[in-house]
Structure formats: structure tokens, C-alpha cells
Length: 235
Picture 1 (tube, rainbow, N blue to C red):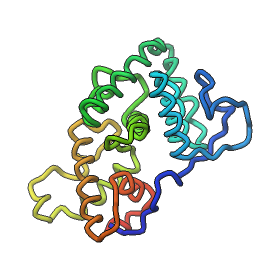
Picture 2 (picture 1 turned 90 degrees about the horizontal axis):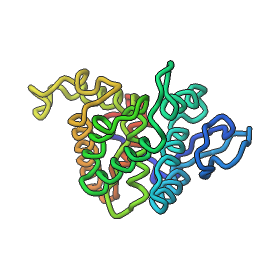
Picture 3 (picture 1 turned 90 degrees about the vertical axis):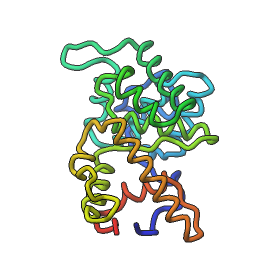
Picture 4 (picture 1 turned 45 degrees about the horizontal axis):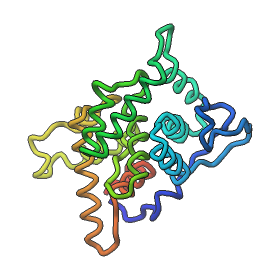
């Protein structure tokens, strides 16, 4: 991998228009009807996650991380309404049930790690229209709010494409021979809990190897490098 990754995750921002997003409990930054774009950083979303931990209420983080993930793309608010209110005549879960499922996932994250939290929202705690691409963003920020632990990592379609390209270019390496095909392993949009664990292990190993040069790397910096890089960067 290239060593040209940004050195701080907090510098990454997304532009959103506050007035277009569903607001919940007037939680910052959704406490305004402003029509002008707002630059929403990872640091700001982590601040919301810290508030959620203090209040033990997690829906504000779902909304904020969802908006951060979509940025200025127009379909985001509609997709969020599906999560909160249901889709195509099918009612969504009650707010209390969504809150309970989020809390259960965060408890699994705290007690048993990112894999268990992923399993929770993938399986028994599934929330309609809230798939891995966005519930891993929720888990990532929930983990960032508790710095005593290694956070969960985001896995979405772009990152999966980058992983598939990386894997495909290494199919003849000894560690890849007779292994699962890259296309199968990273085919989305619902990556299995096992595939998520493979992803976490890869990111951890990559951070360790890059840190051998003397500069400290973390799995989240590798995630950011993969997300922002082009396929030619995966050397």
C-alpha cells in the first residue's frame, strides 16, 4: 500500500444540508433548519456518539452517521425515512424497538467486539433498510466514543470494491492459493459476519506491517486510505 494516507481521521468531512434531513430529538448538528451546506467531520459525528453514550440513547447517532455517510447525495433522506418509518406501505419498527436493537449492538461491541456487534445488526437485531454499509458507520462511531477499545471499521460498497481489487491482484500469492475467490468474498451488499471478520483481520495486519517502518498506522487510517485511493494505489 502507498504510505500517502492522511494522518488524522478527523479531517475527513462531508457536506450536508441540514433542512433535508430527518431530525431526532434535536441532537446536534441537526438542531437547525439551515438550507446552506454544513461541513460534517468525523470528529463532529464522534461528538454525537459521546453524547449518545452519556444519555444511553442511540438514535441520534444513527441519524448523524447516516447523514455523514450520504453527504450531499439526494437519496439519503429518503433512505433514512425507510429506516425510521418503513417502506412501500410496510410499517417500520417502533422507535423504541429501533433504540433497543441499537443499544444491544453497542453492548455487544463493548463486551465482545466488532464481530459480535456486526452479527447482531446483521441477524437477530436487523433493522429494515439499515444494511452493513451504514450500520458499520454507526458501529464505527459508537466505538470511537470509547477510546479504550479498538473501534469497528466501516465496510461499504466502495471499500469492498477496493478489497476485491487488492485480492484479485494477489491470487497467486501463497496465502491466497486455494482460498475463496475475491469476487465471491467481497460481493455485496450484505457481507456475512465471517467476511467482516476477515476484513477486520486484514486491516489490523496491514496497520501492523506499515507501522514497522517506524510511523504509527491504525486500522482506521488504512480504511481511509482504501476509501480515498484509486485502484492503482493498491500496490
